[in-house]
Length: 418
Image (cartoon, rainbow, N blue to C red; front, side, top):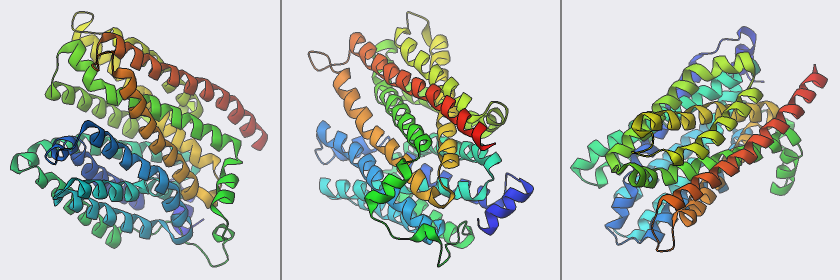
């Protein structure tokens, strides 16, 4: 292990300087990403983008993340986390500039593809957290990652609404400047967490397929990856369908839906940043994943029954709190266990594969959701909402079953190890 992680392991200190810096780095990165989300559709429509174009612009970003996450993770194992984070955040800045200065639709596509490719650096940030935390504090570190993620998604859309008053291009250019500042701060103040030595066996060159096979030969890591894919797929169903749900069931517009999603984001940030670590210490990540998965199954199944006439806003707030709490204890629990079950020399590569699975889920989920939401006349109605949410609940139930099976395997292996 390197000096930073050795120190962390010795004194078991959690909030170290490197961890606080990487928290700030992730937060700024996600604020820039959050700025783009609510505006991309409206901006692309200025260039006569069709609904198919909008779908492809969303899916292309996630597809590039899927393709590049393991590449950046692998490179960070070989050459260190800091240079990979620096160049990828710089690449995100260039992608935002391309979108903000676009004169045609193809430039928006190009900017999204570049931003998606460089946006695959989240696995590197997670690997950095794994480097600077002890195994005992790994869950708390991944919870802090989730908190930075959630806070970025809360602040980003709010800034987008304010900045868009000065022109649709301004938020994209602001995001570009924010990413550039982030890259500079990272370059000057973030210490390297991993030192790759000349004869480190982890840098031996292998084919891509043999590297993948070596990672997935670990049955525990494979189970975690499968469950993470199922969880993100089910959750992306909810996020894609939620605006239609609030419109059909409550008659809400963009502002009301935005407030509800901000409420979910705040709950998620509090849970992951302040509560998850304590729960993981007391109950263990495996048990939290089971509980979170079950809570998501129940929430996804019941929420479609709630409407303005049946339960109203108060009951809805309880229902979507289940989304926030369930995801906030299951998701960081899975990333923590993925790190713990992976080989120490393959943290970047393994977490890159995990994020690739999540990116693929964000491609599959919205595309399948779009098909299920449409009724016979191409509109969303009560029946299509039930069909969509219950499909998500079924996917989440498969994740729950996988988590129960994994819990048994993990306990047996842990007992053998001890």
